[in-house]
Image (tube, rainbow, N blue to C red; front, side):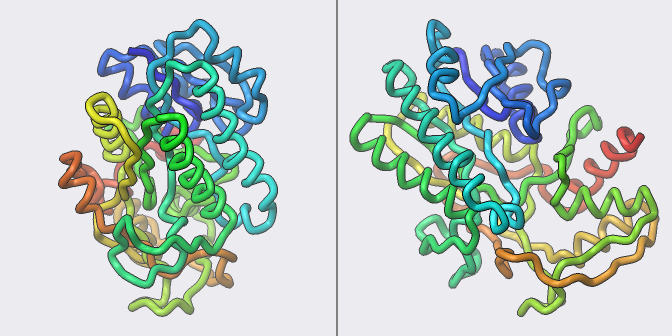
Amino acid sequence: MKILVTGGAGYIGSFMAKALLDKGYDVIVFDSLERGHRDVVDKRAKFVQGDLKSPEMLDALFSGKNIDSVMHFAAYTSVEESTKYPEKYYENNTKGSENLVKAMIRVGKVDKFIFSSTSAIYGNPIKIPIPEDHPKNPINPYGKSKLKVEEMLVDFQQKERLNFVSLRYFNAAGAALDASMGENHSPELHIIPLAIKSALAKKDFYLYGTDYNTPDRTCIRDYIHVIDLVDAHILALEKLLKEKGGFFYNVGTGKGNSNKDVLSMVKKQSGIDFKVKIAKRRSGDPEVLVSDPSKIMKELGFKPKYSDLETIVGTALKWHRKNSK
């Protein structure tokens, strides 16, 4: 079976491509390299550089390739950036996804689609933990751009018989257990790698917001290890191989950690007490995002193995120490 992985030169996409190859699938990686890295693409995969905003490139991508399924990771993912440049997020995330699905439909044979969605579609939740049927009220363009894709997928499933799974990630983090792969965004905006970089460089860390209505006054997030997240995609693919339709799942642990919890864990594991400076809240950051993952656990048999905060930070720290130079 041949699987297309868009954004396969990025953080999660590169882990996904390797996992698929290890399981014996043929993999095509499609990435613009605007924010991805060519050197993280597994050498066993066929690499195609291109842009989702170009229907012509997508038609060429699918032509004669006999692609069976698509895993779609390619997207901008910064909440803060999306509030500054919303048009970029709608053009890249929403329109790019539409172009991709329409290219699949034009080919006529590719009907299995796994979408990288986000917990940001829920906005500020009215219920914790958050189930899949929670009201969708994103408070930033990033979440809105992803929700529009989910709505589009439902329409295409009904009209074009597209079969899909939309996986709503909570906070992906961590690195390979052997430190061979890790998180390397440019620019980096996620708290765990930023805190680790502050520790290793012995530089100040800026904590955005200590006035939230939470026990320690900082944001609370549900962290999922990237290896567990990849396993969720394998399970989603197996479902689509057996069953037709459209399916939505949260991918998280059901447990939350605050920003201060994260900083304490980085200090503990690194042995470095870096200085933390307080800055104002970032625009568009929800207060608490913790999943109810019971649906994916029950229906797909998903069980996180590496998503405790100690393992997440420990694997990330090991990777950053190896690659800090």
